[in-house]
Length: 95
Image 1 (tube, one colour):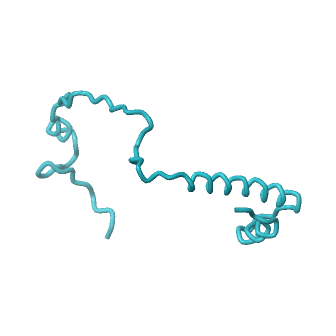
Image 2 (cartoon, one colour):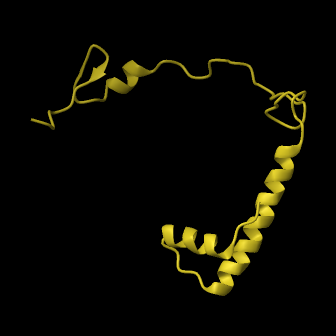
Image 3 (tube, helix red, strand yellow):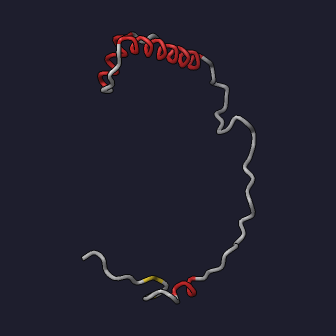
């Protein structure tokens, strides 16, 4: 797919980008090359290829799920100004 200079100028107008005629020509060539590459990739038959999340067949190492901290809620709430049923009480801020 080829992109003309006029199409590049129209796109730049829609995107509110100010580009010169020389820049429009350069963008036209660059974008046409990108579109050609995409067309080549789309032409490849991938019907028998299974999608993959990673190019290498690896798995993530996981650590043991071990409890490392104890429940210290009562200790923390002992220094709070006001608590009730395990919750912190604060002054009303919205009327």
